[in-house]
Image (cartoon, rainbow, N blue to C red):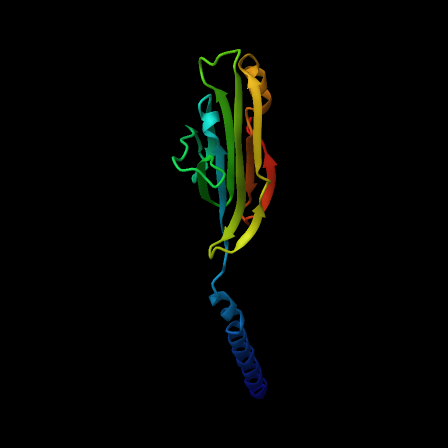
Length: 188
C-alpha cells in the first residue's frame, strides 16, 4: 500500500509539473506580440468650383465629424486655385471605429438673379473613404469616382434645374468595429 501511495504521489507530481510547463509554452510568446487592431475610419473630400459659378451660386455641406455628429456649414472656398484654375474646399475626418462618415454637398442660387440671364454652374468633387489599423495599415478602401458637373441654365429655370442637380455629392459610408465597409447610403 505504501509503495502504491508513493507511486500515486509521483504520478500526481509529474502531472502537475507537466501542467505548469505546458501553461508556460509558446502561447505566451504570441500574447506578447503587439496586435495591430482596427482603429479608425477616414474620409478625405475635396470640392471644387469656378469663379464664374461663385458669382451666382452658394454652396453648403453637411458632414459627420470625428465624434459622429452632423456638422453644417457654408462652403468657404480657398483663395488659391488648383491646377485647373478652380477654387477648392477640403475636409478630412478621422473617426474611431465603428464609424459613420459622409458628406452632403448642396448648391443654391443666390437671391436676386435675373430670370432672363443665362448662368453657368460648374462644380465637382473627389472623395475617398478608408479604414486603418492602429499602425496605419489599410483595411478597406472605397473610392467612388470623382465627378464634375457643369450646366448652363436660364434664371427662370434655376429652381427646377437645382432640384435635379443641386446635390452633386450625397453619400454616407459606414465601417464596422473591424474596419469593414458595410455599404453606402444617402442623406435624407
